[in-house]
Length: 57
Image (tube, rainbow, N blue to C red; front, side, top):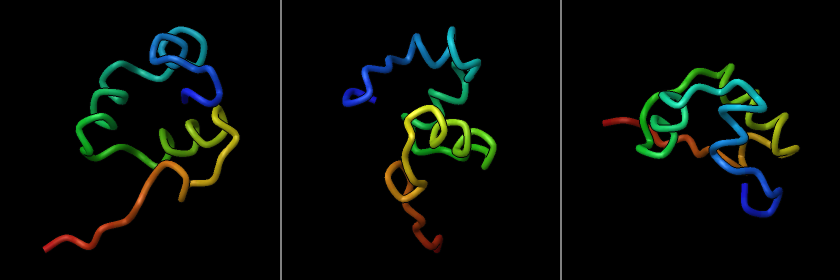
């Protein structure tokens, strides 16, 4: 986000991503694939740039 000059406030105001979704991302909690898709479009990146799969126990 820093490299693209996008703040959390921009995500809320300009792109319609909820504060709850941003908080889930910050806490490494579950988010929808829709949210991940939106972030990739906003940041013009690949999913592997913003997320990593870790197999659960």
